[in-house]
Image (cartoon, rainbow, N blue to C red):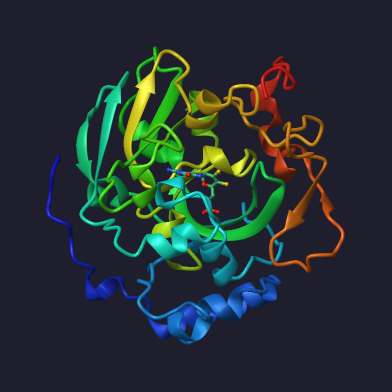
Length: 319
Ligand code: MTE
């Protein structure tokens, strides 16, 4: 099952209008402000520019936040993706030439099943879910993002990690021709990240393939990115081409660049400030610039689900 040709979308996978309509009523009843946007008369009518490929068969998730999602415009025009430049608008402006298909992901390390897999092989068995999550950047801004993806743990289990696998490492593609930021040495390329196995297997950790019901735009990490909503955004590595099961804690880009500023765990913690940003409060992107900042919640509001992962760990030293 290693390298296969991408499968075309079959007509049966195109969701009938009636299904969209009933889902729209359901979401509206649940108070989901984005329902009209997401499930209106198609992406073009939703404030989502034409040309974005809609994802089909996406189920709602009980793990979604009820908070109002940020607009498609906010989510796709205020980004960090240093491969396309260090400015917030660089990823949207510089990523049009990036080609997220065809795509392969190499899986290696402490696992029974390893190899190089097409994106289609990676995605095929996984039903897609919409997960509306709070997203908190270490720079003290936040958003609410309606991701489309599937649980990371469901994918990792397919590779049969051995008992020696204690961590999972991730790597972003290196393509300086398509990623102008990689022609400078602002960071060490490739961008790398990692999680403990327990974190990676947690049901809140997902691999995202879309936002707002359409495929991930390039600037958001097409075609496949990590999302761990209880951690600062820099953990959510984009455009993943390698997943490695490791014995040792993997190197991570930002903690290698500035170890005093960025830790391996990077759990959202209002009590541990970054040298340049107080973490006690955050600014929600899209709110009026002078509106009061809102308090930051431990683990970004997901403490009830994830705090037990860190029992006995000093979260000030292990920041
Ligand atoms: N992944 C790669 N490969 N390169 C990056 O520069 N930036 C990180 C993370 N993933 C980054 C990355 C940071 S700092 C943040 S806050 C989030 O992506 C931003 O995700 P967004 O642009 O979709 O909001």
